[in-house]
Image (cartoon, rainbow, N blue to C red):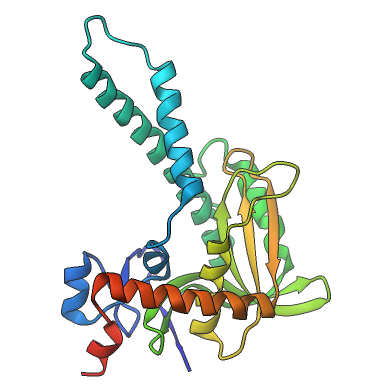
Length: 258
């Protein structure tokens, strides 16, 4: 059965050893120890048109609003636009990471941080309210390893929660995403990611759930995925892993078996 391995909450890695230990570095470093790619690393081979479009729109808006410097050459202005766009993207990523960390804190101990950033009170309150549906936590911020398929990753939460038809165990992933009218756009990769976590912990499919938090307002909406959808998604994820191994010319499963 796939392994469930606890690690420090602050760890973040693109690769993990078969024991769930993070390997910080590039593919060359991973090869040296036969490390598995993370779920998000494997999914990284897919095109992300939504994210790419947002980056392009951000750059265009910066070019329209960033004031020109007298006598500034076009190439120099272009560099400032790129730098300003990068700063905005980094700020958005930082905000998303912080909101995610609040969910992690609530899931682990629930104690409100004394240094909660200004403007994030709604996020904390809404997440705290959401966690009231959790009956029992099975895993929170744990590294899961699937040696058979050859990947690993940190799951946000596996818990027994109050669902539509009564309590059930679910695999849950929190994401920050802007949405309108209480409905967030769910991407296929959201489900692929959940299916990977599911089959790194369970031998059979279970219900999965995305919890989307609006990074600006703290509002929450959800998307539930049935076991049947999870099975179909995992077939796709396994195919993604095949492509990842072919593109990287690296199969960590072969290294592990040496």
